[in-house]
Length: 320
Image 1 (spheres, helix red, strand yellow):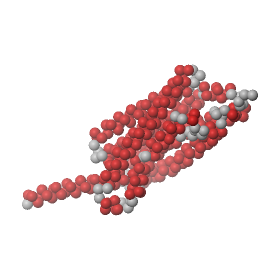
Image 2 (cartoon, helix red, strand yellow; image 1 turned 135 degrees about the horizontal axis):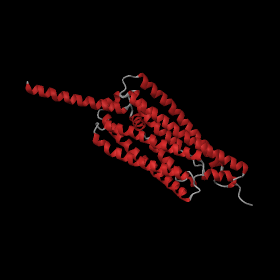
Image 3 (cartoon, rainbow, N blue to C red; image 1 turned 120 degrees about the horizontal axis):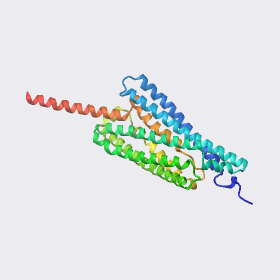
Image 4 (cartoon, rainbow, N blue to C red; image 1 turned 60 degrees about the horizontal axis):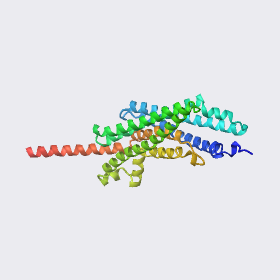
């Protein structure tokens, strides 16, 4: 007696039912949080005339929201189609439609292409926000921008190449060259996830270390901001976007070991949402005037002003 589909690993409960439910629930939960924070940020940008570059930041967060939402919903739709096909195959025990679906499906090809393209675009914009923060906290020196920009361009180019290969290969996996191309695209994406996580972590540390150094210059000023060391650490890491690289590593670890995990949860929609959510949180904190970056910059400007005033006073005293 042969093995039924229900007994095979491909059609196991973990893969066919549990994983899609967890993936969908997680993605929709984070998307709900994103929608709330996007609305809150839009409200602050619209009601506070004193926010610098208000129109630019509104365009920025709106573009990120639309791109991230489109990419996440495309990937979620793809997962739902997969679950439906698996369910119908289990119910009918007819493998024909399933084989045709996995080998060539125009709808799935389009959804895959849209989802991963949105990920690369949203990631590029998220990098831009962090690089801008680096530029601000390191004294607005243009030389500081060179390496971060080059690193971002290189990594996102790898991600884009992976998206092209993966989409082209997925269009018809019955062709051996396409199947190999899709596999190569997946490997490119895995490299993109890990490298991007590393670079984003470096960006985070560049911002966090500089903020910590500036804020710690005077203990009295730290107390004035009413932040304990613990709360300050959490605030800095949240503001610098540490959540995103963590999600990238988790996603890469799962996607690279799908065949070894009983319930391989798809974190692609979650990663796409976080790519837009993290910059939105940074801009929201700026609008609420609790951004540690802005406080640090204000302190630096104040110190420079005092130093300039002292020098000028000293010069006047010498003349007298």
